[in-house]
Length: 537
Image (cartoon, rainbow, N blue to C red; front, side):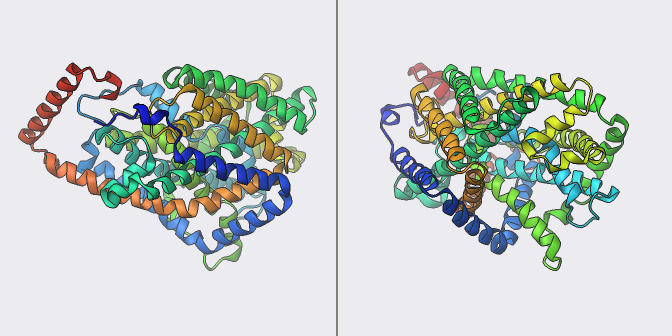
């Protein structure tokens, strides 16, 4: 058993040094010339989307189908940990943490703005038609459905398997040991881990910026507070103090309680919109939307629209962008959900990850999407508002508009805290030699850094700065995608060898399994008697 909390974890790692240098250069470049920075990164991201869109379609499909394959494979019986490991969190808390870390602010920010955008400018239907309504809901659910979770799952499985079953540290590079050998302990490993930290910082900084603008938009709509950098700076400062308090309290306390609270608040908001919105239309649309999602799943999954220039342009603006965005987020979300999934079986993990969040997404985006489109169709001025204020404008057309808006702001803030809290843990672990318990000081340093980066980007270009980072995420997703492919192969290679050793088939070799469990139990008891910390066994 390798102990990730030893002395080496207290040394300043190369990953930390190089990551800070790269992030600092990025921020400085954005401050010195934000317009040029945005233009260059936007041009590169556009080139990647145009010439590698087909690749993103294939790799995201491959990651999803790989996860589905594992459900039916004997590998699905393997535990993400040792045989004696039990899940650290209850199933309910585990599921809420999966959803909160994986989506968070985005499900609120895009809940009405994306369906409205697809309604006005659909891929194929006539704008603002009945077919456009159906296409808008279908497209939104598709973007936030199983594909995103398949990407997260492919990364998280490899991390959890090698970390908890094989005793590796929590570094992403260590998952490649079966194919790269000891190279993962050298320069190659450092490069992979720096890329992981870089992608995480970019993704989280953009999310914090988006959350800040929507909180600002809500306060403006409710209390006529100004939408400016000063107000956004105050919002970031207040929320930073809250998520640092959560980060200081530890993973099992802060994120667990916040994630449970998020689901309660989200459920209240969802039911309120369902009751006060066009209820009958929503209820009729729910089975239709689910059916459309399932019925068109394969066709949309592999459709790059090579012969339809209008649809191809739409795909580059939306679907391909989302796939690249989820890829760039996969190290952050994958590391976190791997950390909270210790003791689960591969099959249990994949089923929960693909079914539960996708089902919630279908319900959520149908309720908010139908309500948003219905309100925007009756009040066209909503269409012309920015995405950060559209939700509050829709609430303004409903009963109890002020309580709904306040609840939405609280939920966004809570998701903000959860995402940032999760990110501080992930960054702390990745820059502390893979320690499962990075020091509170390291997490606080990363928390302050993330908030500072988010505000500097708003300061150095506002929306342009955020768009530049989004472009950087698309660019970062391309090289990182090759790492994910290697992770999938590495995981399958080792896990398949493990299941053969255990004799796991449709009917497992019970005698061989019993010998393995007895040997593991003996090793466990010996380590326990030797005084090894129970959390490290």
